[in-house]
Length: 208
Figure 1: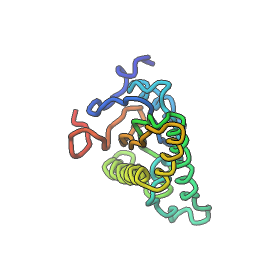
Figure 2: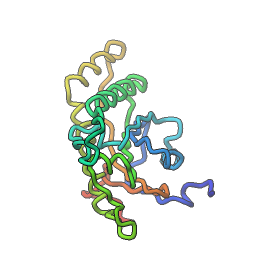
Figure 3: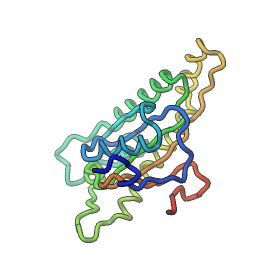
Figure 4: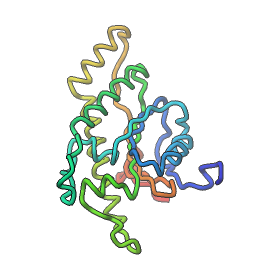
């Protein structure tokens, strides 16, 4: 296996590099853990990111989660509200630990996600010879964007203002600044595409 991720993986380059600390929101899928670390290392985030993982990544923690899959009526619905609360708790803790120097949030979705298949009751790979990759990408982009909007909204909330006031008790000059939020989609070879971000391209996509 090549040791250089740049040799064996395709990574986007059309967005500003992360500046200080990052928060990485990802999936629990065990197949891509090493690939995720490689990508973050490539983006110069080694030893300066905090990580929160949830089944399905954005779909389980955004404000518009789907209803449980129709084929799974006998199972207990996931506790989406609790998951969202957990993410906010992590975000607040990270802001305290970094003294507000959280400059970047990476939402990293991945293809062939079992949680998406279950929660949406949709199998993008029902026909392996002709998978619905466009529909899969659109769904991941949708929920990741909703989560990004939720995060932006939180920084305008009373909860955020209370946290800012708490930190200002020991640091009067402190100002809570929203981080840059980007959405990525990782494939099963560990390659990464930017679904949306902060570059000037209005679509948020990298055209390589």
